[in-house]
Image (cartoon, rainbow, N blue to C red):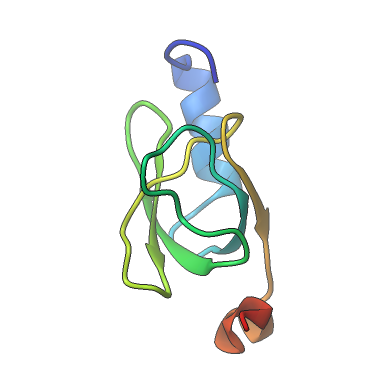
Length: 86
């Protein structure tokens, strides 16, 4: 996402990723220590600039940025299995 999102955009992100949503990282852009592709996590909250804070199964609490980073929403069952992590 280029620049800061509008209030409406942040509310849309919050609606898409409510607390407890399970996600799998596909690609994290431009971070020196990115969450690895395939890692699964659970959304903890969305801040006022639309960053989606997530508790990743590797112990990281790094947020992802919708539009910059690529994630997919997964089922509770996939999450419980570790999302297919090797």
